[in-house]
Length: 212
Length: 313
Image (cartoon, rainbow over all chains, first blue to last red; front, top):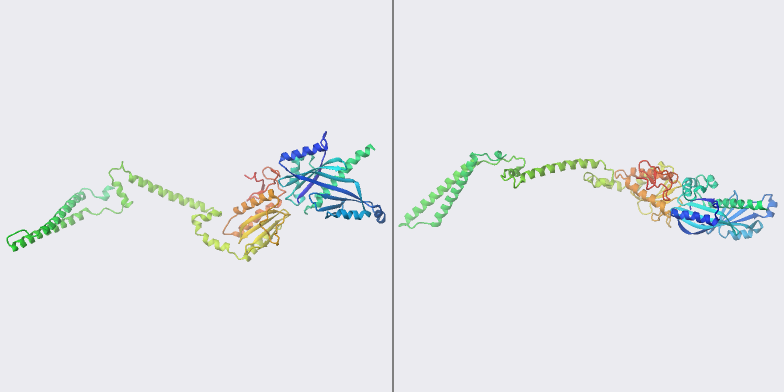
């Protein structure tokens, strides 16, 4: 487990999502990266049930339950800006039992699937973000395995990302800023995915709302 | 030179006379034996026979002693060859009259000259090479070969308490580096050096000599199943730490000073500490972080600056 940066790559002009992903993977392969199977990150949204809101006088908070194929035995539960819980995979069945407090918003399920590449000590995962049946965007995850301190290797990560993402290289992720000198953990990666998914959901909602 | 060996004229004359005297002596000795062989001549009376034989024998013996006396007199005249020639007997080669066919003497002189030069240059060279005696190979050289058997027992057999002290002192010197000492296999110490949150290094010691180093990632497991520090586990993060291990091995070969092993350990640790900026320091030559997917893994032994493995030359 090293330091990871998750970013969104915009769809190239005049190209489909699939074509843009192919463009990216071809660049990676030219660089010398090796294909190593596939990966999947999914995210389910839970609303706080109406009964609890009224009794405690709080506004509804969203909770996200996520899975990552890199950590197949774990399940991540996150609140926006809030704590992140890492639990065993059967946490999902617990959520079914907590139906009275948390309700699953099925339509909001979003996931990113794609290919996993290795280049020296870097792991690169290029995925297509889908919500329901439609492809909504492209996610790129870059992990540098030898390092555990996010801020130590940010410049190095950025240089690597520039080599295949060019002008779409992202800025420093917000989780890096709060880490200081503490050790990077898988939960930080999931927070980045959660932020990315939220961003993609909002992007898509705006034009849809405009049509209505 | 010939004059010094044999005085000409008189002595050469004496030589030929002496040779003639030797010949005379030999013939007179032969006559004595002839006389004895022939025995008594056939004479009328026994008395006459005996008398004749004794007279002849006496006469021949006289001539022998006379010739011997003459030879002794001449041998004094000849004198001895002088013995204070610089090349001793080989100097006599210069007397050879046929120089052109067998130029032995001039060749001999050349050989002497070359051997003198060789000795001189060898002396200079050994003086120069001894100035580099900090290197490992210096021990194999002539002068320090005598010193070696003395130095080895003192530095190889150090009490464990002393080793602990030296390591503790180094541990206190570098706040960002923690050194954990254990002795999992007998008396040899094994150090687990944790450098910031960057990497872990397993250092196998033999007394105060560093025997082997293995570099691992900060988040990698360094313990074997029974809780000891394991030096056989290789790094999972193959590219990067494999290279650093390589460089660390180079470093421990570079820092060698058999007489002061604690200085060696200290300078090795100082060098190792420069890896604290492992992921933050760009290459001092090309200014980049990555080359072929690898960060600058090499640290210069003197300046401790970061370089890519391929940029360091």
